[in-house]
Length: 221
Image 1 (cartoon, rainbow, N blue to C red):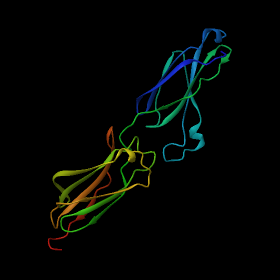
Image 2 (image 1 turned 45 degrees about the vertical axis):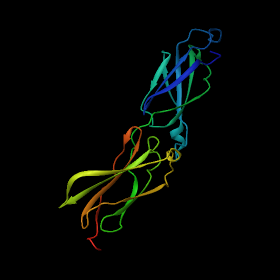
Image 3 (image 1 turned 135 degrees about the horizontal axis):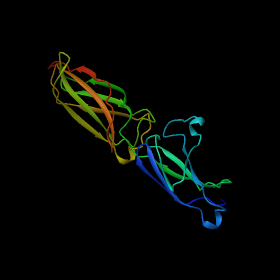
Image 4 (image 1 turned 120 degrees about the vertical axis):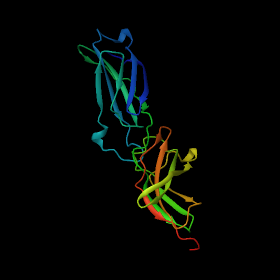
């Protein structure tokens, strides 16, 4: 063929799949009977906040006789460059203009980093943490949840309490150096608490950080 397929469309069906559809090249440019199509795709790198080595950016391709294909096992919340070519028995024609398409969001793939807890007084603590490792965000981080629960003899007592830090729209695309802190008050004096932190996207919460155990001061201290 002397022209590429037309009307290329691309949409995300999940955090790891894209559906690509198209129409054949104009009949006057087919130059013979079409025997199939090849869909070429590659990550638009470097991926958010991280460097991707060149091998990873090599093009992948999938052949089909249909006018649509589902690209699977892709990276989550990642932009792909997609193009399509048509073939006759003689060989493939030109590729279509590339389309940029992004896979869907998912829950974060890792907990927040460097969680630290500082005792302020007998009823309050300060929790500090850093944003997720680049490439593990799996979407726009909308906020963080700090879970805290009383601990006695190594066992949780009562229901965990949750404090939410919602990020403003402008902070959704955070870089990996962002630092956060939250003061939690109303705690019992001379009591041990277990603290964990998790990030969330519109798809839900990610993994929680490892529990940090901290004991408030006695009353009057």
